[in-house]
Image (tube, rainbow, N blue to C red; front, side, top):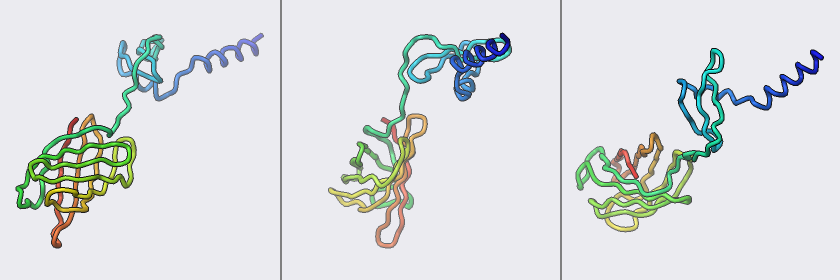
Length: 166
């Protein structure tokens, strides 16, 4: 009888167990979070906070680089157009486009590598008179893009940094 009871308890524990990472999501009692498409609420069970299934669906917010991002870039050293100017970057799966409205130039972006939250591109200027062939690196952090451009003209290296938002 003891053996059957032990097997039953182990099976029940396996059935209702929750991944350790989800248990770590409980910071305070009453807190709710989305896990695998459903809401869980942190409740005290004995001396521990435990995520309890609430039978309510939720959307998992998956970070994405796709979309149009805008901001102001700061160039070092300053160019003929000054050191600060607008940057508009549109990203799709294979690459995207870049526009510098205040400089009157822009072009296409070819994705070289990346993940869901970061990527590297080669820039090709297709209109206007800006440095062609620069490399663009982006990192998504807290809903914003940390954006860096590096290029070279007449032996001089230029760097532009910006924070872009949707």
